[in-house]
Image (cartoon, rainbow, N blue to C red; front, side, top):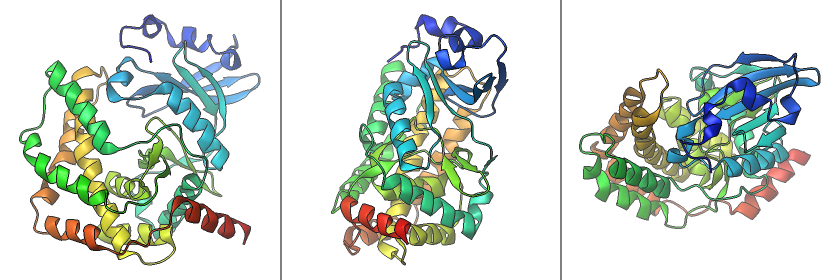
Length: 329
């Protein structure tokens, strides 16, 4: 894994692109793409085609991003049929290139549409029934590593953050009870990671991909889009193909896990990123939402609903079997 002091980050974009054979063209057109908080992203047009080049930033290792794992998981996701093909990976240049997709990037407002949520559920099911990823993703473990980084480096921590450790531990215990089998999850489904080509939704950017509880995927996406309770029910029901109050409760609890855990991601970025972006405000928005649930009147009820709900979620094998049957119909 490249460290923040690696000499590669002193090179220009052009010099790094020249290190990737598929992108090496003296007449190439390089256009910056918006977004990207841990990468610089470019549309690269050469004589052979149009591609996306993702250039890692130096702080990636502090966020636990495994670029080799991202490459392997991008390949697996492409095999599932919901992600663009990988064109090239050059770890010595910290560059991953994927095929360019013509389409529209979704917004959070788009995700409030029932039909869009149906497509999101279908794309998630396809990814989740595809090849397993190279490692697991557990937000409890990830947040522990983030917290260790913050403490070791003296980064700013939100006020009272550690006061919720007992509740955090209770959540972990409840979610571990008869948990659904882990499936290959994206784990970072912001609206900007969906591309609509007019016929289907594609899922892009697999930095945080890993095998995980599917309800984390659903809850995290719901939280990132700031959707309402009704939309969570719609999303979960589309995903499972029936009304599942137990899985709605589980996804809602995983949304809380997402908010509390990603808060620390933002705290690290605020301390190390050179981007002109208010990571602290981003972090606090998530933290305040988490606190409102921790201290709200329904937190105990939510824990109880997950702890006592029916344990009828499909296993990974059953889930893949069901998905394959649907594809053949």
